[in-house]
Length: 375
Image (tube, rainbow, N blue to C red):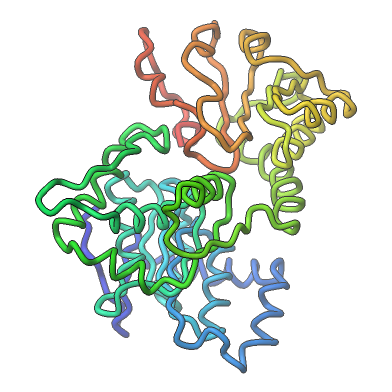
């Protein structure tokens, strides 16, 4: 796809896959609004007072129908919004189309390449002469990371250096690393000006929160950050019940296999792991948990779920679910013990968890039969 910003008849910038899907997106938004009464109540109560009037908000969050309801809530409360997806696979193109047509600047489409992904993130943060956003709604920390990398002090004539080229553990991570370098050469003051305007960021997921705590610990965090991930209404509801609902649906759609009778390994038994293990157990899988925290491991045992190390079960398991929020969980040496094709499913964040890129280093034939599973 050509990376050129388009404009609506009203002058709003956008870049989406297919604007003809906007009407379908509007129908889906109307259905989603019924299931999101909290946001609709916010519109009714605070819409007249316009508490976000004049605020410029950039969002890096899955561009789905539910996110569309959030975006239209922000605009209903007075905000100006620019949006991109935090994941190259998760955009619903009809959702992006309707928001681009009716509500806000959107730069997102399903199946972005990594260079396209970072281009979209740059456009989301680019507010023209004013500099940047007042607030960032982030999921995974990529928008926040881009500003931090782009505004780091540089030596006058030296090329900017990115010290964490494999932060995501993804193939193609150097494309991400080059993004702030290119932007620095094009406009050395861009991200410096941007960081001075930002009031703060809200971070939605474990991966992004860990990044923020790391930056806070080493003194490089540039602006206040709100840890949404650990709020009670997120961690105890979305992480637990949301994952319990979405895991079997996503797993069956991606792999087209029956869960009942399979041996399913859940790596991690926090709130997300508890929801995933529960749903797999109810679907008829024989669930095994890997856990390093003794309290969480004991909780699994009290639920009747055996706790074993990954090395002990990797050869017999059929389904692997990682819910740790960390990287280097399932490694190549684990996969080498696996005699047959297995189904691996990373839940919640598709980054900074397992070094799947290293699978390409394994010798032998590789075949990809299901596109959804690759994503």
